[in-house]
Amino acid sequence: MHTSSIATVAALAIGATAAPWNRHFGWGGWNGWGFNGGSGMCMNDAQANVVANNFKATIAAYTNATASAVLTSDVQDFSDSVIELIDGGCPSSAAAGGPAPYIPLGSATFASLAAFEAGQGGQPNITFNILNVWHNCDTVTLRWRGPMPNPGPFPPPPTVQEQVTGIIVLETTFVSWSAPQPFLINTIYSEFNSGAWLYDLGIFNPQGCGTASKRSLGARAVPAGMVVRS
Ligand SMILES: *[C@@H]1O[C@H](CO)[C@@H](O)[C@H](O)[C@H]1NC(C)=O
Ligand SMILES: *[C@@H]1O[C@H](CO)[C@@H](O)[C@H](O)[C@H]1NC(C)=O
Image (cartoon, rainbow, N blue to C red; front, side, top):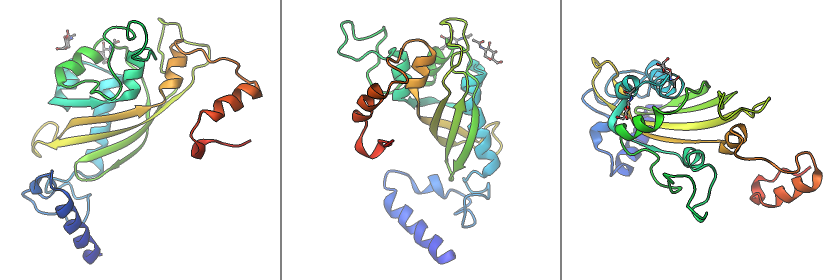
């Protein structure tokens, strides 16, 4: 096992031209041939769960104090799914470019802590469940599901909401083991089922539900590898 780990370390070192050596290996050196020691600068399982739940708190129990405690001041958030919600599903080619301030798909959703606070602070808290957490030394990936993305009362949610499932990758910056949060989130990559969320918000009104013809029409618009044949 050590032989293959050394090969992996070498491959990482060669490939990671953009990442400084000490980002992964740090003062403590390589962390015991794995990612679970919680020494060096590698997070262990418990610390990864803290990072995942820190992010959850910024969505489910938001305060500016929480955001500034768990995010770096230059945090960046990338999510076309969130931008789709902010833009109300409107394309950039729409007459007025969608609701103001229209954000183009592909841009940073929030490019700083202040922008995150200004954007998230105005949102209702959304509860969701963390389904899985994976991590390496400095990056946490989680899978989540929210049963009721529209907490209401405005806009009024449908009687039965479509659940929303998503995946988030959180890159972190190591601070120190004695810091209140040893790992601060510095970059967020988040995508989820914004179609279901737009339905729950009443912005997207699907047509012809339950009719075979519409379904096959819709299937034709789906990439070939994703079509489920019935
Ligand atoms: C969200 O939850 C936090 C923590 O419970 C609370 O302080 C805040 O007021 C809530 N925000 C809204 C919009 O209800
Ligand atoms: C949270 O921070 C944002 C951005 O600095 C600010 O606009 C907002 O007023 C703050 N909210 C509270 C409740 O302090």
